[in-house]
Image 1 (cartoon, rainbow, N blue to C red):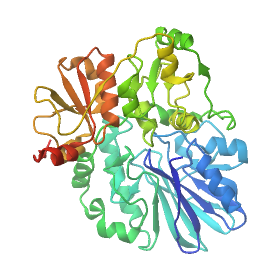
Image 2 (cartoon, rainbow, N blue to C red):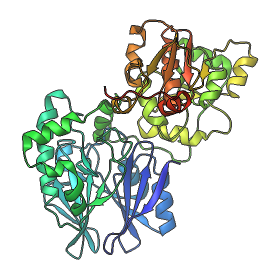
Image 3 (tube, rainbow, N blue to C red):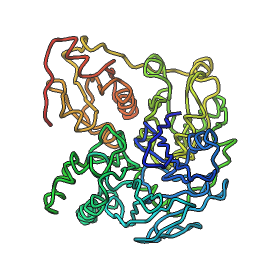
Length: 465
């Protein structure tokens, strides 16, 4: 699993941060001191939450959501169903399931500890932060997508017409949070690797005092300049972000945890029928295996911590999905990553993998892997990393198109011999597979990144957009 527990001391509060490295988020398990627990911003995949609670001998009695999440489905409804947990969330969110609606200043007695809701709009317009207090003393604040370490979360997820308005609200929210005592712990949900961050940083937790000293946005006292700074840092984000908030408002469907991590095994004939009906084949094998032989038209998304992000970014929301994997790859992890971002349309996996496809006499395709020092000078170099990555250093003459833009933009690129590159090769393989689906030929994937190319050739990278 990608979630790693991290003990986070704060006064006398026993708190564990559960970090999902792939989505770049943290949820928090708080020991309430009486054998029960509060979970803040739980994901739909509750395996790490339950493991941490079981290890600590805790029963989950409360689940709190700071906002209507756009990047993952909340596990609060599941916890209410399975554990009888009371769900704490903003009244302004108009959620369509049973919850304890909170407004600004509302307090909830957790049995010794209390949480106080602070309205902190900006990332979303119904956003709450939760101040956790022990005996009247603020121990920490769950800031969700408001104040994050070194920055603030993005404000453009409700549409371009709301972005500047929400950025101004974010300014006021950060000013409000920064007025808390300096030793108050800051426990954000979004952090490094999250496309909700603007921009991402390395650390995941902090204190109000540390943020006042180091967060450049808290050093801006002019609202117009704050808005300019925040909006200037916004990059692209996956299209599924536009769907999940509404699903979270309605309440994600309750899952049977015993069967949720399973997939039907499909014979080759069934995969053929599904493909004919418009299903996409997702090849989750490592890049080398995909490059050697894959089903023509399959999209390469290697199973790793970031699998869910790219599955949701590259695959249309209305198509069935067939998985191809190696037998040693964790099917349960793959399925839970998909479910966490609301991808419930996995039709099954190809039984016995690519070997079954070949054994049935069906053709396979291959993609060349190129070493960093062996790029043919006659080939176009296509760099598909995010804009900040490209600007930090790229090959001279490299064409830049972000991977997410290739979903609809692959047909617009001239069909020419191309080496596709990213930081290591996984995203580049995904880009090459999209180009292949669009009819491009003579494709290769760089086995490495720009640093490897510079080291192999002795040439310098180019910086800037």
